Image (cartoon, rainbow, N blue to C red; front, side, top):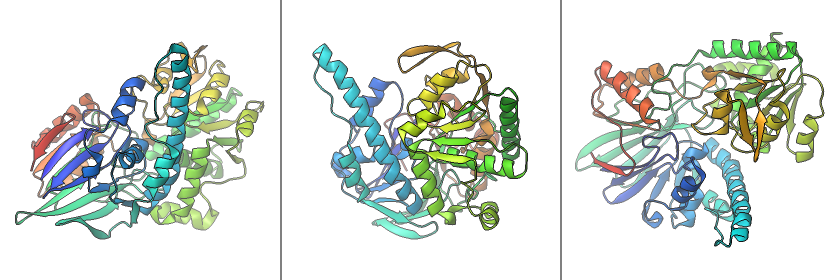
Length: 463
């Protein structure tokens, strides 16, 4: 068996790992690489292998850095099955369509510039039509069910606790008379988070591919996150300001809505208008409602008592552009939750333009901000920031609550590896900046786990 690490190797984006087992080629994730525009455009459109030679795709979850290049894979010749959970399949149906729309819009904008410069026109990496073809290849499997995906290879999905439908991919591989169990975490979640169950512990793992997004950092507790959210809301209201929350459409938006609901019921914050202003976030919330089987016991009890975690009287879901623009005419304290979470596109940009210059307002970050993104620059407190081609002065207060992260932190990653360590032979550390991956590797070494590798992009390792 060989593993070639094609994406999320010494980076936190573009997850893609290729297994070759007895002549069969199994791809783990097929995510979009997100970085500098030109580099990302070239890397995403040019796959590092012949797509037609891939037999099976196993998808850990719906986040675009894990799923976002699937339509290009299909467009390039892949015609095999895509195995994932049913909740991930449903989320991908909306997220990949949204991704195609963004890609097509970006290329249209770039082509307008290229026409004026006399340059050849660009083709989008994929289109909405490619998404529709790809979705026909999805097969939804339930947690705990085992399915043969290739000769001698059985797949079982277990709950990763990261976002709705996220899965630990367990591959039991019979090769040359030997049985290997390989575990790919995808993105590993945390214990005791809102809405979702804790990550499951997989027994008898021999080879582990584990993420390391926060391999060198620690998070606060979920209880501390809710306390901080209450503080930020109340302090902003006391200044008669607006609270602007850039949030990822899947997972973080629903967590924040549910957290605000809980705080309001407990009278820890006043009832005030809350706007979820993102069509993708609205659609994703509908998918959350369709999959209560993924909820933890606490959310189950909440549903029995209050019916819907994602709805309350002062909450408004906004789809239409004209309704989004109308939010700016509201002259009292409000909360706006909008995508994208790193402020790289979407309606959040217009809300930042309208609110970033007022010292009464607060911009609250509740998710990871990758290097060089607009969100990272605002979070760092840069005095002048570019938004849609214009520079704006930052006067709003900046807050961040890292405890809302859906990624396991260093201690949680170390604890998880120790819990599956009984028969562990190799650990491959991926999906992290080099510094974070090295910190996790050192932490594992300090706990007596030294059989670790941080692979380079394109590196092939034989097991």
